[in-house]
Amino acid sequence: MLRPAPAILALCLALALGLAGGFVAFVFQATQVADRDGPRAEAIVAMTGGSSRLSDAVSLLGTGQGRRLLISGVNPMVSERELARLIPGSAALMQCCIDLDHRALNTLGNAMETGKWVRSNGFRSVLVVTSSYHMPRTMLELQRVLPDVTLIAHPVSTEAMKRNVWWKDPPSLKILGFEYAKYLMAAVRLRLDIPTAEPRTVRAASY
Image (cartoon, rainbow, N blue to C red; front, top):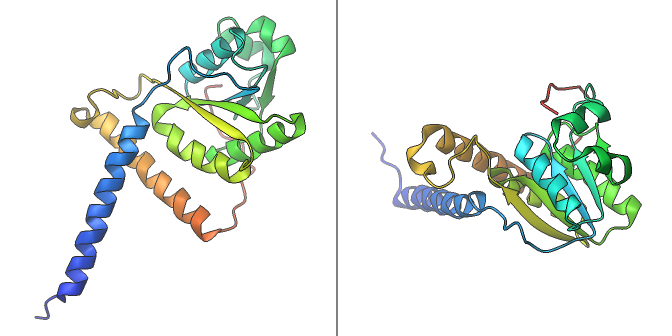
């Protein structure tokens, strides 16, 4: 039986170590949460997918840490009135300072629609609000479409992941593993400049 050449074994080992090291670095980023008294920006964008993302974003808007808020990826079946009912303290702000994006279906779509909104309003700095584990991939996609805009990450905690004990919580480990795989795929796609098109089908969502 033929044995793998030492060079192949060394390459496989290097690849495995690289992936493991990358995962450790990813987890460090994906388990950080922002301070409530963080930096201000001209605008705020929040990605749907968890109530804490939206309530934190509305709170930031209410305390003046941004002038306007985009909620990206809202289910087309959810009206502005329903959303205001679901997010405490948002009713008055919904009338003046909150825009809803019903088109984005995924993280790539969030970035595309956010890019359009930021450019149309002429914003130069944006607070990005999403779950901590989702932040690395979100920032990767946004940096591609908004290279000249200052993007400030505001990661929030989520009940879906126990970020302080993730290594002994199977659901948290699963979330981080899947998100790391998605992050790597997005990084490769952007590195190779592979064309993408956002699907235009309606998906179910909480908001």
